[in-house]
Length: 279
Length: 320
Image (tube, rainbow over all chains, first blue to last red; front, side, top):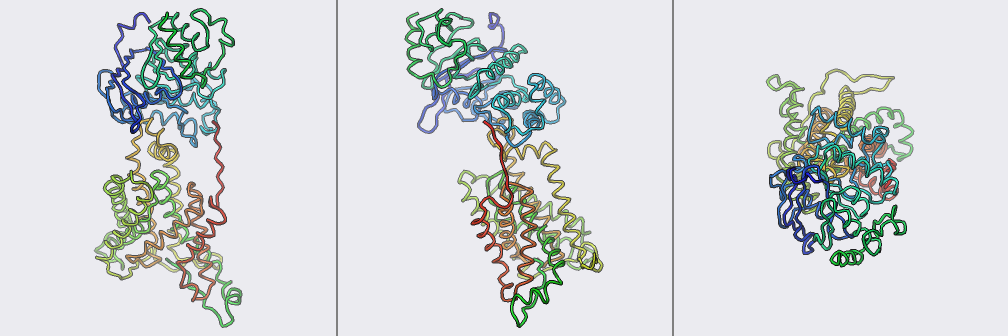
């Protein structure tokens, strides 16, 4: 994390605006993601986290601002073209081809690379990372468990050879044990050099993975934790858990396994923010 | 359509006809039903491919079929004129032209208006149907045209049942086309991508599939299937400029009968509709048989009342 300044910026987002009609979902978000870095975006339901990813990926055409990937402006270009550039989204609720086999889902992930030999190699790598997917190769994707589906969605994203992999709510609807498996896999991918942008309601998960946490509220980033600032991260989680400040994490009831999920309300975030200003 | 000659109503009415004169022709009736059913099956699968990818019900399917039949006639020559093209080349050329026309119509007419929704697009395909029909009327007039069978010779007798040679071409080539379709859909990259667009268009975009392009491919494939059906049908029926609409209706019913989403269902729906039609028309008095085109509509009402999901039962297992 200390060497990040030397690494080139892969994804640069400036003042991104995303609107649905009159509703502003993202109001001027900026971020710069370096190679092999992992950003976590946290915040309450409806804070604009998924809209941010939709705007970056091109699933929704941004109303303003800029997105550049490796120095090339990709603002407003279509998702299917961004995938070719290596800007890949693993969407919320997974969006698998549910009536098709696990193998076909993965192979479709490599669609843009055609008959490239690397696709077959990547398939082996993904199946090594998620052995359960190799085991269930011929099974229909829709019959997998939630955790397996999440692994398949991530695996399918990897098959597109991402320069930046954006993962939306990887823990959504999963049991804590399964969440751990997904976290382990994402951590391993980081170790292998992948650049990640993760959106999560589960702060514990985001903290376990990310160098930077961005807290979103009402479409804007309202707080950012610096690289490796462990203390402020602890302060953050303490605030989420209703604690009194840094260091109280250990004592918080159920602090080690609480799945924050839907429970993070805007008011909790507000509390956290006022505490953040005090410290 | 080739319909078995309706058995004349006897003086004694309908039931005695069935048992006295008609029953001896049952094998031939069934065979002709299966043969017609193959054509309906191809047209029903054409509807299915277009619908599954684009959500558009293509009411021009019968007119694509008519165009395939007419162009085959044009290139091959009704009476085997030696100056015309060989039959295989004529069929190929007809199918290629109609396929290209299907792709072009999608790009120029359907695609720019797709944001208007499925009902609008359905009406647009009815417009395309009229356009094709009118376009065929100008050069062909209201005349009927026939083509020699692909293989000449007397009907083949199997266990005492006389089967025209073209029947074998129709059934055999339908099986071949369905086999190729199955292979394409499950084994090729383009086929898988086409299915991906059916199953989940958003996910298809997320893996880099240009869904727009697959709308065109779906229309082209639909036109191809219909044109091929027209080409193999023309030796057993008379082609006219307005043959399309009744076939569209029958294909539509066959498709609904098969449960809308399943290709196997569409084929089964096509064949069972063909058989049912042949039996109904073959064993009813001429006064009833004259209303033959009402059969699909009556059947459609029955299907919609009895089984909304069609005859095939599909259980979709999804865990979240």
